[in-house]
Length: 115
Image (cartoon, rainbow, N blue to C red; front, side, top):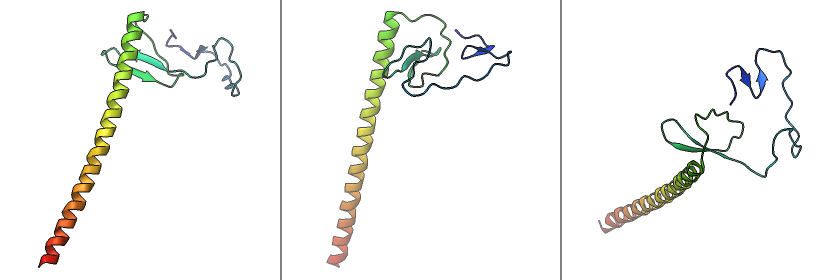
């Protein structure tokens, strides 16, 4: 946990220089270098969220257990799948709408030609 008087481990009361970001591929002391990372958090209202910003500061009330990890990951996967299905449904509805508009335009043209 980071106290309210610190930011990234630096005491805000001291006049310390801002640390420089490491070059790509350069190891950061005290941090494990990994290929990619994301963070799954459970908000105080019970909703789960996946964050891909590893610099996002969090202050957990309790330590996550294995059941929290399982539930959080399952919830995130479920939300991703639901988003994919919603996007596919919206795309199909747009295609159907376009087809209906084309059909109506064809029918209007056909009715005008019959006159």
